[in-house]
Image 1: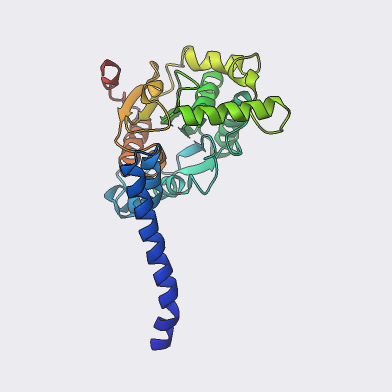
Image 2 (image 1 turned 180 degrees about the horizontal axis):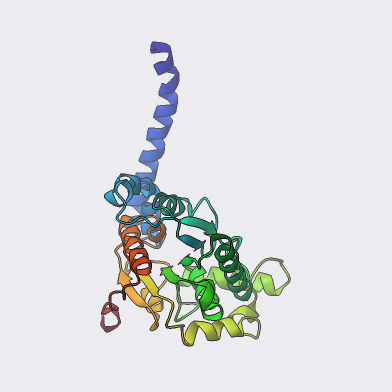
Length: 283
């Protein structure tokens, strides 16, 4: 036993140092007002949700409700969406992640992929899925719901820039423009300038600002603490709005977000009319 403890001591020490480093980086970023400090904190604290009542004693059980999970820019991966998917599985959802790559491609392609994924899951499950979409993924998902409302039982967006496709932090906007420039020059798999302003994604841009099918429940979850996406761009006039207090990264890992999702899923399952929008637009 003593030998095992001695062997494990270096590993435990290294883990402790990593935790201390993460805490130190978070504190330094907050003191220096570095953009996205809240997201550094959310990464360090992701695992805390597993100790929260919303995880330990989920407020809803969905009995196999099909769900399409859509990631955002550089977050459309099973690793980054893992905690949210794990919780959705825990409450009984049949969850599929839409294969949108890293979310850096053409918006029109993204909408088609989400629409196709929703239809395939509806055929497999025998019921239309709810789409839960994070950040830029909400743009793909709104387009898919407008095109195929019969294949979407409900839409929940998390920190999605819906009313302004470039309604994000200037540093992130520069990153989007850089990706667009690279795509325009021929780098495969990237969005292009025509996606933002030209003919390529004209249909999707119209679907983001146009009417939304009244028969599809639509909830937009946002946070005023979001340093990446301007929270007002999440206030889609066709949606009901739910405010939470978390960072952009926290929108896929925060207990308050999971609680909001649980409430909306229960609303969809029972067929009740959802709560009215909050008054964020007046602030």
